[in-house]
Length: 194
View 1 (cartoon, one colour):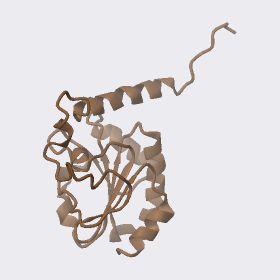
View 2 (view 1 turned 90 degrees about the vertical axis):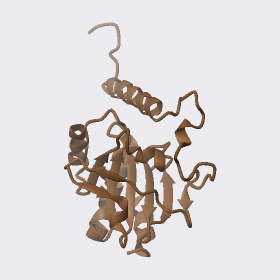
View 3 (view 1 turned 45 degrees about the vertical axis):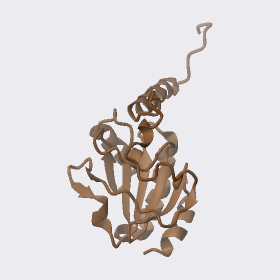
C-alpha cells in the first residue's frame, strides 16, 4: 500500500464538468467584454421577466427551429395546442440526471398530451453523447443539442442547469424554475393545462 492517497474516482468527471461549464459560459458570451453580448437579440432583455422562478404571465415563448438528435427538424410553434415542457440541461450535470428522472414520471402520466424537449446547452457535446445520456436516464422524449446559430439557451436566458420552462397551449410561458422541479409539482401545474 502506498503512502499517498489516490484521488476520488469522480475527480476526472468534476474536472471535465468544470472545463465544459467554462466552455459554455465563454461560448455564450457570459464572460464577454461587451456586457450586452449575452442579451443581444433577446426579447426579455431589460424586462427581467425570466429572472426568478415560478409562474409567469403574458410572456410569449421565443420560437425556435432546430433539429433533434434523431435528425427530425421542428419549430416550437408547431406544438401550439399542447403544453410544452422545455428542460435546459447538459450531460455532465448531475442535477440534470435527477431532473430527467422527475420528468420521466411526468411523461409516464401525460404521454403525448404534453410535449417534452430536453435541450443540451453545452455546444461542445455531440449528439452521440446526448443519445448516451438519453439512454442512461431512459427518457422517451425528444433531445436536442443547441447550436451556435439557434442559441435557444440564450433566448430563454438560461443561466442555471437544469432550468425548466412550461409553455402553455397558446405559446406563452406559464412556468420557469431554476434547479430541479419535482414531478408532483409539475404534474399539478400541467393538470390545469391538458
